[in-house]
Length: 104
Image (cartoon, rainbow, N blue to C red; front, side, top):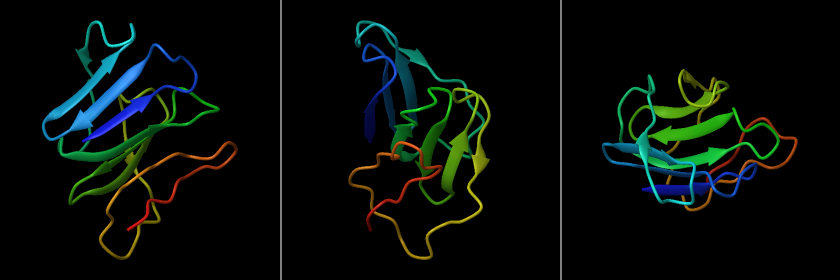
């Protein structure tokens, strides 16, 4: 399960987990499903790029790390993947970087 607050808009929240991927644009008062083409919905980590609110990152269990440049509608697997099992703890893309490392 992952919970993320948008760095661009603190009222925008994301919740991602097993069979759930939701967004709230009103501080969690209401939630809508995120329409996506990820290969599954068992998401273990999620983050939004602090410099580009349309760029999102997700770790899909058993499938890899994916990025979206359109706010989460379409996703592409990142070409460079960890070579061992990844156990996410925190995942925060740094300002100016194009990807993030997840401790494992």
